[in-house]
Image (tube, rainbow, N blue to C red; front, side, top):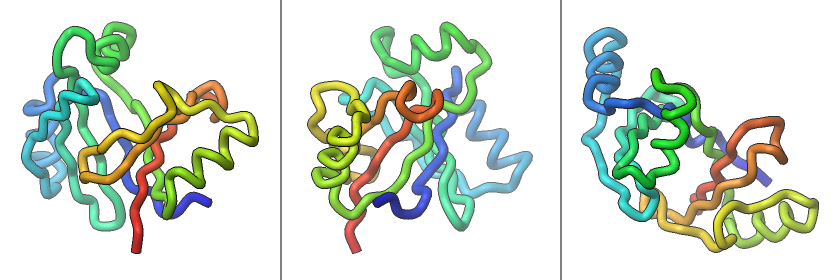
Length: 136
């Protein structure tokens, strides 16, 4: 069902400072910050050639990333994102198998303009999983 690894997301308290480290110390190509109010985050994607690293910081006090950073103030790995060709079919298969889709179960538009869903970390060995529909 899952396709390639789309990205690994790292929660950070300051996306500009984190971006500078990846750009200046690691020589990575760093994209521009993008506010995603529907998700409560600001993101920056780092292209690694074979996948991406997504740096995420809270966008407002009610952001789920704010709660994450309250527990881990320095930041840390937040989730992994896998591509799927049909997010509705993937969600149906997963829920039939007992996995829980977070939120209302309906896909939201992600940073790349594609539908995304998140799966409960307790169903995947403590790891939050994002699925992103990527066709073709």
